[in-house]
Image (tube, rainbow, N blue to C red; front, side):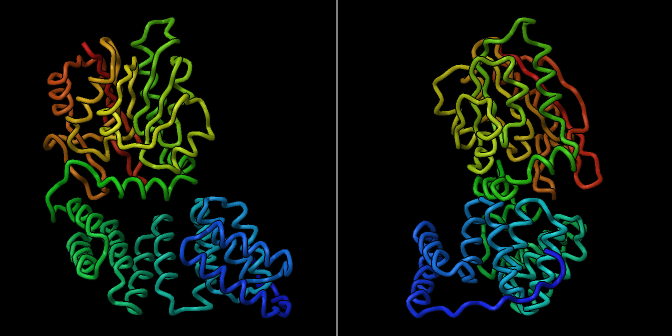
Length: 409
């Protein structure tokens, strides 16, 4: 929204509707979204300019990922009351979920101009500044939040993330430890500390961390990954696998591990009679379902899915998945069980040469080619092709890695 609209005169609220509004807000706070929505809509049928109902129904639509509806409702609410810091904050949250970061920042700034002493608003502002690759400004926002609430664990965590972006690792470690002492998410914090060498490296990224990360980015994921980070791994990897298939291959059973929003689906479909996608994130799977092309989509962790799957496949692909799994032995064993003899297993890894795998400050694992070759031999795979490529960007920096295709003997 631009400019400063005049505040419309809100109608007088009859006592019965005020009571219904209080009940709707109570239900909303308890997580009873369907019941709260029904009450908000009843109020709006009687009073179409009821600010709280427009505002909070917009919040519910945002919580349900119905972002177009959320924007419309919040814009209506803000036309009625353009001095609501809370509504501008929620409007910014929806814009951020849609990847409209500059507009989200403007909305957060409007919110904070109305209510400067809002730690959560400052946290949101810092988060969108990080997404705009402005970590120094983000750090200032987090530190303003901490001046208001010194034990705000989320602000301490994100402050540490910004310090990591800036290469100030010792300060980041101290901030993570403060967040831990303040009751922050211990699993998430210890994982971040491991990325900085201050805790033992786990075998994989925490499942809830990965699920939350991709649920958060689902709406704007494709645009950010493909356009901003120049991500072309699915195309390169499927091309490498297709080159190793028979020229008339078209009736294969294919498995897309960590399928995300389904970028590999349209590429694999010409080869596949059946195509199954697996991913941790329900919101990513919803996008893959919208894109279409999959016969089945399964919400599961990759290794757990493979351990329980009785069907056999001709192709398995994992594009940009192993950056969240360090120890690949369980996955290799699962893929070996899932493939028919002669089946192809294609995947990408970020390149690392120091050891089998390392956990980087970016929160992503890198793997050495020697480790990949050793695991292939241990699990009965032959190495069919290895290609060194820039597989994505991290900010303005090229990220190098390997595209690997193995064949089960």
